Image (cartoon, rainbow, N blue to C red; front, top):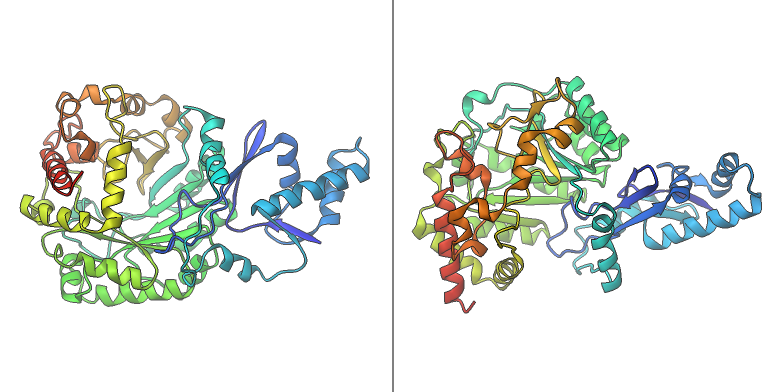
Length: 478
């Protein structure tokens, strides 16, 4: 028999235990929600030692047992053999390792994710409960850095009208040395997921090396790209790693509208072609469609296109202002009448209506509830090493990795601790608002649309959007 690590499973070692998880909290699913959900699992200290003997390549179970005998010299071979077979059989049954005869790895990967699967995959109720609580019950309320958003390029080959990065800031690329620093420090902190973005990340000539380093170090990756620069080399690297998911933006199925938004002629054809190439290789994809004045009558066409390919898709009209506080990109933002049109369309769709209703029913808005999840489990890093709280909030610099470590900033930053402590009662206007359950309270929108970058100054656009959503939902029977 052979045994090996499965390529869609992540492992993190802690002093007294080990942690195994799939990519369900970070990667994208199919539109039919058919991706295999393995869940997560805690290993004892001894179990971690057993698991650590595995590699990505198949090993004979006898060789694994031999290695374990060298670690546990005072335990009889027969005992180690029985324990090892029992342990790896259990992990195999739960979907965390492969144990058995020679097998085609491509077949295993296809079982995990394939656009050809059209039936939703659901965890059993008992498994769902266990996997939802494993991480939380282990770490309690401790703030654990599980994901990083890394901008490896501020440059972009498109010039989208709604982009929150000021044009004069789109100049530089992340060096390999800086990325190596991020990888090393992320490993120390047991980070699970890196979102690699920009600008346009494919403008960084080291992207292929960055993705390979993420694979070697067992990181989940979300690659955010317009895909117009997708090469065969990058396609091979991406499709060969089931822990990589790709997100792109598509603004309309009318190429004139899409190209007008990107201000790059031919971008529609390149992006849609790349989407199809990635889908052919079973790469998990998400298509985003930011909604603005020029495409608010066309976003449904994008959602239907994605659905026809069994690709996950999303749309949203909450655009961020430029992080230099100029608001120069917001002339394309929807007005109230247009928002009413969008909300009415969305709540007319049973899936969207149910999702909004569930969010309203579960949203916690008491005085002492957190205003948002900022700095609870994630941070962002610019291409120059600046650390900031959230994507789009580059104006609030927490520190720089050339001067301080990621762990120092995460644990000791005054800014980080202040943001974590914010509650509804700190925002008097929000705390007493009748629409607060319908609001996506966003400190980034507050900051970017205030002349002084004051994130405590409530953004009125969010207030109007929440009021409209509340009114429409009430009219729909909620």
